[in-house]
Image 1 (tube, rainbow, N blue to C red):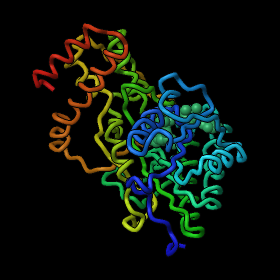
Image 2 (spheres, rainbow, N blue to C red; image 1 turned 120 degrees about the vertical axis):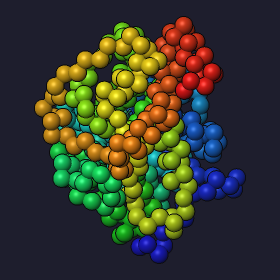
Image 3 (tube, helix red, strand yellow; image 1 turned 180 degrees about the horizontal axis):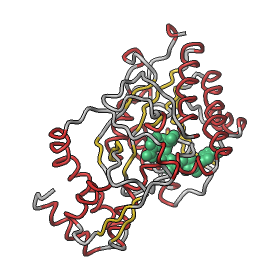
Image 4 (tube, helix red, strand yellow; image 1 turned 90 degrees about the vertical axis):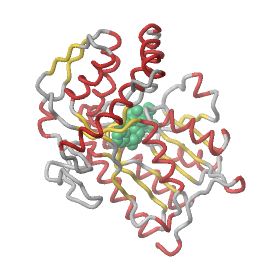
Length: 343
Ligand SMILES: NC(=O)c1ccc[n+]([C@@H]2O[C@H](COP(=O)([O-])OP(=O)(O)OC[C@H]3O[C@@H](n4cnc5c(N)ncnc54)[C@H](O)[C@@H]3O)[C@@H](O)[C@H]2O)c1
């Protein structure tokens, strides 16, 4: 019942949240975990996944094995760690889900139901991101409203619509503070993407730095909405810390920039001039996949955005990746450009 909804966690020293991050070793969880620990204290954030954590994540704070399909395991961790806030990141993303629909249905639907049932029992706040993949071919493509037509054509999209609606149901009927943002494709330099349609935008940097050549599985002019990971996580933390009474709904769109494989390759070529771009026809799945932007873009606004924002993003990812991959010389050149204010 809306009237008994709990206020969001606040960051004062007396009321720091006790956070559980499921799927914490993924592209987003591994970085969000570090940020939340800096904010709320290492011991107040418990990371969980079904894989062995890399040493640097294990050293950051508590890590536990939790398979979200195992209700009792999840319940034990929530109860024993006095969790009051769950960031639910465990999921199979679009490309992986399409290859293994049964597992995607299990993890994305049953895993989420387990979390929501526990949230109702133990008065937890739950954040579970949705995705632009929850839209479909009939969704309006420009200025897409928060409440709109949603008829996705992938298993991943279907499971995310289910999560949005089930979360709202628990909110309305059981007073669970459920929150969700529809993320665009997330670009990160440190952590690899988990198998989504937008992964090409990260892979292309790796190929550009290592082999100087990249074949895009998307059409050259396929425009997809994207966001650089620091912006996504900063927005997510702001959203999590927003008092519940300031939110009118449970689920909102989140938008950053958008670009095509051709535009991205052209931008990267400014930093790595030898990059050769090849494109191949999209596989059958992607013929039907919807290409959306959650903001209006006229050609002139797009140009304006591409210059500062897109260039900064491309430069930042290229610099970090070059360093991470031990490409010292490339990193030095890119760092120098940055210091000289070229990007
Ligand atoms: N990365 C993106 O571009 C993007 C875009 C839109 C939405 N999202 C959403 O953000 C969330 C996090 O995405 P990500 O990119 O970090 O995903 P990811 O694939 O990188 O990580 C998912 C994690 O879930 C774990 N997992 C899988 N099955 C599990 C199980 N049974 N129990 C517990 N953990 C399990 C995996 O080991 C993995 O570490 C997901 O809900 C995803 O749908 C991501």
